Length: 465
Image 1 (cartoon, rainbow, N blue to C red):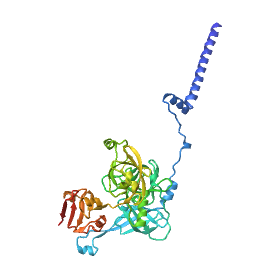
Image 2: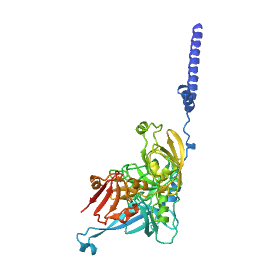
Image 3: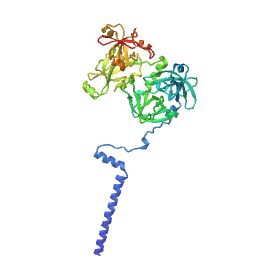
Image 4: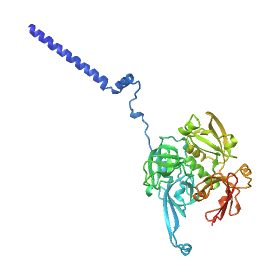
């Protein structure tokens, strides 16, 4: 009996231990496994002192491109450019139109007004003899070229006709943000009405620091290929933030990056061509370079972004407002200026006579000055950048007229000793009083002689046979 009693106690004890273990395991499962987010929150809060918010699908915002695509696709047209090239070997062939070849180029354009005004790229319609545009509804129209600007790569067309057309509204490209969703709409590889999506991956992008074009592109990863040039880059509201213009690729096809002229620049060029027939460029009147850590250390400046003013040009708005050599431009109208492309991009949207607020760092102290932009009198002539001289510069050299060489990339003239700072005073015995005098000298003009003066006032005559 005693043995049976002991055996029963032992069995009861084993049962109670097993039951306790099962209950304990159930509690642990319910606490740590059935409620993982709660346990992780407690564990992480104790161990690494961070908070944890579990992913909630219902709270995520859904990006929908349908409305933006619908608003855009009917306002982007296919542009066909026909030009004539001649490969004649004799005057007889030339005057009798022998050897003529038709060349056809394709691209895109964006209708920006109800009466059929179109913005496209300059390179899409360059040298065009006839231009046709085709809408998303397969209606074809002739278009007239009203003007273009090679530097910004923007041209303006007008559909010939009195119909009403769907058009795209302009958005403020200065307000776009890196990471923002965008759509590229155009006609790649002659495939009409193509929409691709991506994000803005960079702003104020200059593809070549050494050319004469002050580029300030919006960079995206939306797929853009041959034929997309001149098409629309729009935000998720379907409003225009850029004109698709270029890609960087070793193959000529999209490899992950595309570039668009910001809508503020495109709109300004468009309005200038409509109102004035050419582009009105406002100059600040400074030269310099974008800061980096090396130049900041060299000039003992506390910041590593901004535009360092190396020279202030005479009789220009910057000089009149009090900007000095050594100042660092950090903002224009409260728009941050981190590099040269930021500066040139913002100024490309302004005209002569516009007043802008310039934020400066001077001796590591911030100041603001109001500057009125001046007319751009710089011209490109025979590979040289040339500007008007001031009366003071002429008086110092005892000259009555001449224009100043700002930069010389003409290899022949450079080898002859013509450098920055030289004064060009005569061509073919005709005085050059200002840069307007150079506009009458075309590629068909035979130049026999040129007279220059060095910065020290020495006369140099170049004779060409």
